[in-house]
Amino acid sequence: MTHHENTHAVLLIDRDARDVVTLTLHRPEVHNAFNPELITGLIDVFEDCHAHPPRALILTGAGHAFSAGADLVWMQQMIQASEADNKADAKRLAHLFRLLDEMPCPTIARVNGHAFGGGVGLIACCDLAVASEKVELGLTEVRLGLTPATIAPFVLAKMGIKHARRLMLTGERFDAQMAVRFGLITDTTPFDQLDGHIDDLLALILAGSPSAQAHTKALIRLVSQSNDAEQLDEQTAALIARLRVSDQGQEGLKAFLEKRRPSWHPDSATRASEKPKTPQ
Image (cartoon, rainbow, N blue to C red; front, side):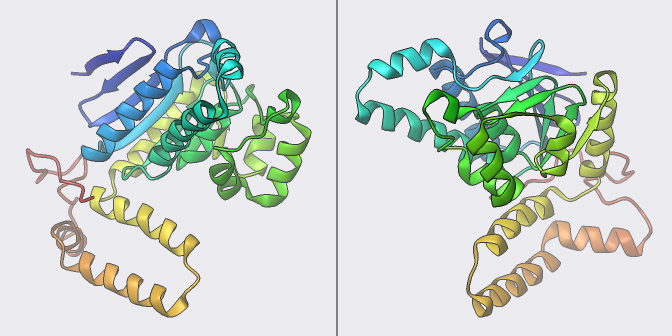
């Protein structure tokens, strides 16, 4: 039985029996563009997912678009606002992207339609991204006299400086196949096969330990940001030692040796009635 919850008119939230959350940006009349209400809603949901991590988070858009970035009405309002107000507004947006990037559970962008500006930022913050093969994307801010400031750390981390230089400076549109070559998109598929492809990825994700996945995401950030080799060796050794004696580490190793599914696996005969807790 699928549980539906809708706490924000601009967001649809679905937490299913597998404990997979699907979050749908729901402003189809403006191509799911960002406005203050949507930003607040996303921050609320992301903070809740940090506090109570689902097994996976899927992010998608309603209608024909994933997200067109900033809403034009909102942009007009911010033109009239002070620099201080604009900075406060931008810091909330940066916080939104940081929350998604550092989500403890695996995240998948279901790129159902076109994505521009902040929409590309959301994709860059997800671990995996599957796109309908007909979508177009763009980092078009320079054409508006702006820069992709708050999304830049995540876009550069995902596609690298070489590709970001081209796309951020030209503001050109690029297709899903180019996005795969640039590392932004994981896979493309015909639109009618999008959900089946994501289900295949979810099957792989749900076979993994929630605790191990949370620690692996933190490990990736640690390794990518560290410049102290000796300290990094100490930290990685401490992490694997801690996980080997943890509940899920012990369960995973025992299950492997006993040739059975571990308790967190959806098909496990010994699956606990209560889902494994993911440490923060």
